[in-house]
Image (cartoon, rainbow, N blue to C red):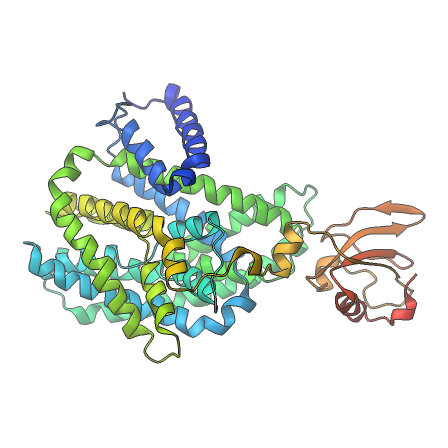
Length: 492
């Protein structure tokens, strides 16, 4: 069946509906949701029962890039900087040196077990060198897996920030495959250009976005998530246009914004959480449609050998070498190496050789797809089991919930105070978002002129307002008084 304007919405919505329903029950059978999305796409494809004809790598790549924007940005918004800060060095090394070592190690192995040239082998290694943010975020959060000693922030930071390195290596080695007269030294300027510009752009657009979000004064709350979407794509496209790494820029921008005071932040976070799931489903369905199962069968043998080498040799070796300078227990290093999930990102990167038209592009794409599939099936289904075996998981009753999670999940507050705002107070005339209110407390209501109003981040504090503040404890209330620059006896 060919996709037309008349039936594309019907087919798309049916596939989306089936994916959501299947995903709802998938974990009862121990099957990662992402595998089901891929499987449904393959079944709906030309080789499956759906018979949908979809053979457009360029469109698939576009959908992939758009989807990765949402997935990485959502992951960045949800990253708690206080949790990540202690492991920034480890995360940075894993997302750069770790990716490079994985690419080189696997590429060398591929060179000896296939008829690929050395540059083609290193290209294949680069494509699958990064852990997949969509897979890691999805599986860790779906399983609600609690890990000890900063393991979870390390894994999420690595998966969210290592795609740029894999992208640079993929583009660089693809260039060497096409122009074999160039040497490896030509990669170095490209690497530094992409990383430096991407980092600067990420921080720059993050600060600019905060100003725009808090100062623009939109009339409707629902427009704020739309504004953030526009800022996200501007960050990615402008960074890419000037020669930087757009994926790195949007991740840094999102981490910055996620740890700032923003108007309607709760609405933005919830909107992005839903959009990230939508984009994961769309991405995996699209890639499933793009794959022809009949073409994968001939590469199952070599694909399994390469996949097993990646899981049990290349990834662990890269992790252990990268983490040599850091103090970390052996079992934690083993677990980090095990959570080297490959998912949609390698498949998206595998479309670049297809569009470039290199000789072994189709075989490379099918091998990459098989590697991603086996990685999710082998590693994705065993994350909890391996965590318990290595004793790096926290029993559910011991799991700590961060203040931001408590706030977003609307856990009940135990302390309530009414605080009057006197004339001359420094917060008069300021928006709530500009006060830098403690994250452990909320302004539930404001009593103004004998009326009660429900505030949001854009609400301006006026003199003689009475703020009804809820906090988790008395310490939080003290922080509120400090933020408002008033003495406790001023409370109404």
